[in-house]
Image 1 (cartoon, helix red, strand yellow):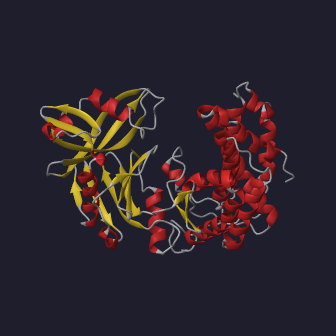
Image 2 (spheres, one colour):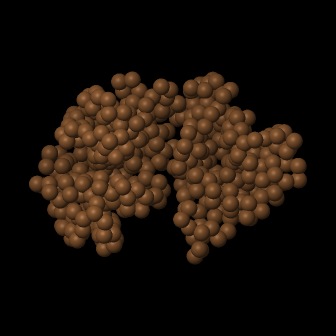
Image 3 (cartoon, one colour):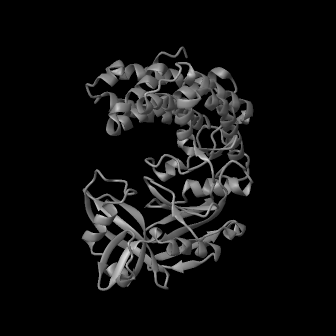
Length: 460
């Protein structure tokens, strides 16, 4: 065993993983935690170890996590995120150490393959020119929930995936596809690394272009809703155009089976509505008796009937690879243009499901729901109530840009079918939001409730 790992007894490992922001099962009790494979990827001090840890829960399920560990002599006086200090050595979170963060980039640039006990690590570059960036001052990207990102100068950003699932991460897959085709509105992929072995074959991290001086779309929406609501509305037609161009690019290669557009199977929409139907059943049977949900209490069957009505959409266009978790927090405003980020899909869904081809209108519906959230959040967070017509105008601007730009062969041919299919996906999203807000932000429950009510009252 690697010497540093001998310093990490099970209790220390369990406490470290369980206390990380990126640990995704904080409500579950950890039964055990141990390293299932590891290798030293930098032998000089400070050393860098990449490990795959298995975390087991009661009653017998488990998750895999990537650990990046640094080690130094304790006499160095390291003051970063220490995990354990013992026998004259300190083991710590490696990405807090600029020398070790840079090491991952050096390994990609050299396209190194390193053997581990049970498998191997593969580091690869897709754009060697990108590695001319200033690597002298890597810094954390800020607070993240499920990943860890480090920015290098103003040129590159490394995203390290923590919870591992078998298979290629959709973000690597989609960014590589779009970068190879020169799509301008995503940060270009520069490199990646992955693990292949007995525990799992999984993407470990990606390196991509950093977009300096850009503003998160959600933050910008809230700021301009406070200061100049019409200014933000003026940005949304272009956001719709970029979204349409993105979907066109993702549907552009009929020779690649992973990306070629397909006719939806006869059961595809039935499966979707059945999934939403199960969500409706689970949530509406157990709605708490609180005022915000009163307008929809006892109306689960009505929501289900409305879903069935929406589902008769006629021609449904084609299914393609899509973003999968599209909202204002996943786009950056860069000058007068937009850049799309974070192609992992919804992290709560299994990786195999996130790689499925779906209607591009699922992304469109996600952004429409984000406009509803922005309007409500403006009041909740800042006490500023937007013009009641703001959300309607935002939807119109975005949809106008989208449908004027998107390849018409991948969306339903007529307006009624498009609106019906959008309503299916908006209802899917609103029901998902209702469950999330009930569990996490009770003060925000009114937002999905209002969305569900709007869809119940729709003329379609």
